Each structure stands twice: as structure tokens, then as C-alpha cells.
Length: 326
Ligand code: PMV
Image (cartoon, rainbow, N blue to C red; front, side, top):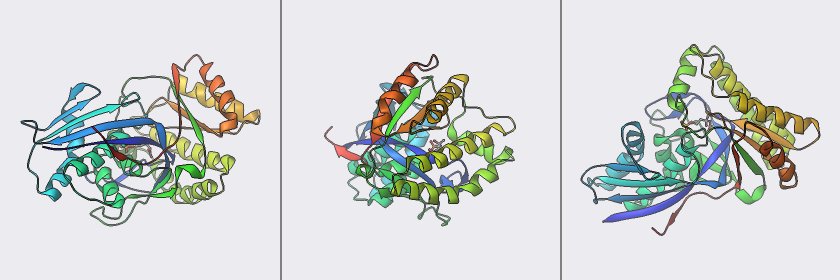
């Protein structure tokens, strides 16, 4: 039996990925930039040759259909490269709610990539792992690295140069994030369908994509200098432009709820009072607030006092994936 277990962490983008130039290979229209987070993790065990057919279990529940198909987009190339024909069994557990805009696909597909390569006894470089993880979920290519990470869009038709790299290790800047959980359920429109709809049916999508290169440069500089105000300006505008493009689709795509806006308003109130904090939100109703450690108590207290916030999750920059004992 060939088996390995890996642990990987979610990431949250400061410069958003929203648009594919190739949906089959998950090739993006532009780059993106994120931080990998300790505190939001997935642990996945991959075994070859222990089941009659390909099987997937997520958080104790058997999964098939789209979830299994997504997992096999990562496992199939690894099986092909290792010359393996055996069925795969994948057992995965998240320590945060799945499918609610908390990047469970990034940590899940990154953990799966590392575990599958380990179980298949393939010695892949981080760059190669990032290319494979991207096939499962675009943002997963960023979770192959710890700390501050940039995904370069690349230009090759086969996707060989579309992968992430680390800009700075997690120790470079001790940022803190408060995830304001406003809803726990899975989202109505998954990110793949959402991106395709925005690309095809939003007059603002092109403007969002065209702004990314400038945002990447500015976000990279802000992180290099640990300049929270500057990073916040870039991150908030990337997030709001992404949501504006989504909302302008026909039919519209609206992920933010009244509760999400309540958190965004609270962040803006803190900013007006001189607190160093900024917000971002992905394809779901939860909002993430970033600050430095000295501002964490006031940010956390403010968020937890909001009627629309069910609970908070605290996280900080974390390391890349690793193989762990079963
Ligand atoms: O990689 P996906 O298909 O889960 O898409 C992620 C999209 C966003 O989270 C909204 C933005 C991003 O860059 O992470």
C-alpha cells in the first residue's frame, strides 16, 4: 500500500484572482498575491490501492460528483507521472467551514497535491507541486508556499509557467487576521462558475483584470516595507473592484450580504478613528480584517460586538504544506 498524509494552509489574497484564460487548466487572466495562514488548515491522507474505486471523504462525509472530479484533476496527473493505475482513497478534514469563502479549496487541493505526490513516491519541486495544485483549484497553487506569495499568470499554453512563488517568509511581517464569520453554509455559485459568468457577462471585468499588474507591484512594495496603510489601500481596492465586476454581471453575482457590509463599515469606522486595519472578502459572505498585533484587541472586540458576526477565527502568516505522520 502506498500512503501519505499532508497538512496545508489556506491563503487569503490581497490582489485577487478572478478570471480564467483557460478553464480546463485553471490558467488565470492575471497574477495574484496572497498570504498563507496558520489557523486555517486541511489535513489529507491519500492511499493508493486500498479501495475498489476512487473515493473521497471530506470532514467525515463521502463526496462524489464535482468534488471528486476536482480532486482527480490533481491525482490523475500524479498517477500518470508515477505510472500508477490503482484507485485512490482520499480522506480530508478541514479545521474551518467548507465552501463559505474561506479558501477551503486552496488548503484542500494543496494538501491533496502534497499527499498524493508523497504516496506516489514522486519527488516534485515546490514549483512542480504548485503547477499540479493549480489544476485542482487556482488559488491552491499559492498554498504550496508559506508566507507572502505571488502567483505569476504565465503565458505558456500548457500552464508550465503558471505557478506561485514565495515573496517573503511568514516571519517577514507579523500580520494578524480576524475572520468575521457571518454565515457557515456553502456558497450558492462556486468560484469557477462565478469567474466564467463575470468574464462573459460583466462590462467591468476587463477593467478589474487590467488593474492587476499595477496592484501586484504596489502590494509587493507595501509588503517589502511592512506598510499596512499602503497594503490596505491596494487590497481594499482589489477586493471592491472584484466585487463590483461580479455584481455588474448579468445575471448578477452577489456574494456580500448585509452582514458582510456591517463588518466592512466597522473596519472603515476603525480606520477613521486612526486604527491600522483593512478588510478583504472573497467569493462568500465572510469578511477578513488584517491588522498588526497591537491593534488586534480592538479589532477583535469591535468585530465580535457586531450583530451579524457569528464568530471569529484568528490567524497569522503560516508555513507551506508538509508531510506529517498519519
Ligand atoms: O481558486 P478558486 O477557484 O477557489 O478561486 C479563488 C477566488 C478568490 O478567492 C475569490 C480570490 C483569490 O485570489 O483567492
